Amino acid sequence: MDINWNIIGVVAILVIILVVLTIRKNLKEKKKLENLLNNDFKKTEKDDVNAEDSANEK
Image (tube, rainbow, N blue to C red):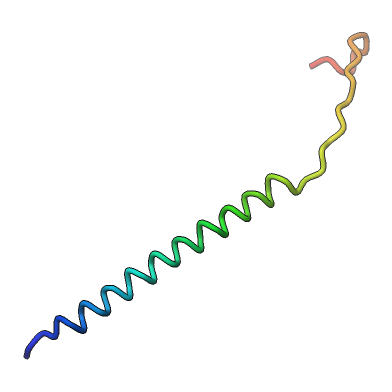
């Protein structure tokens, strides 16, 4: 049984290309998700704390 190194080489190159493309796509999706999560929120209104009010003490 003879090993066909040409076919093994082609398959290895295709696997490497597939892995690289998958990693690049995942990085793009991660960046989009991170931007969405960082910019898609409503800012809360700040409440003024009254120093004389005992309910605001912690």
